[in-house]
Image (cartoon, rainbow, N blue to C red; front, side, top):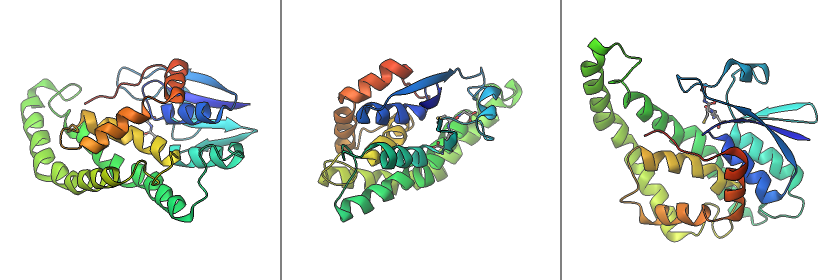
Length: 221
Ligand SMILES: N[C@@H](CCC(=O)N[C@@H](CS)C(=O)NCC(=O)O)C(=O)O
């Protein structure tokens, strides 16, 4: 039986979502975030980094959401519910699967950190300086870095139904998390096709079943 080590409000929603899409039985082991928003120490007993998602299946421990999605699809999608056959779509899906965590999320995590330099746990005396520094780095560096990403994603979704092309795939599941984070950290006002895509995928029955199983997902701005 697959066990999903599920941290609340986290990337492990992706794994629950895929399992629901594939209708594969699984069990959830739940973890609450600490007051620091970090994962509890208990997750380090499953995998040395102590991050979520991580799954166990037949004595295997698999971490990294992209690797987990690929593993589950290869092993449990014999019916090609989401698996792609068209070579061009397979290549596109692979690009977005890796891009989500390799290129986009690091900038969004930096935005989260620099956006908090004016808050606890930064000592209160330093918060005005920290806040100003954080805003400056966001404006001068991060927002500039993010601009071509925003344009590339919007252009892609304005001309394709899904990240792979025409068919919904694990690339859409993987991209959902950074796009929810982007919507909190910069907004999607100038990205109408991306907003539309997000609304559409969030209407899928399996998305809702994953929320029922794992709890709502709200990401900090
Ligand atoms: N690249 C990894 C990132 C894993 C990750 O950072 N997960 C976050 C939750 S969204 C986490 O465990 N945060 C708690 C912590 O860092 O202690 C993946 O895609 O699985």
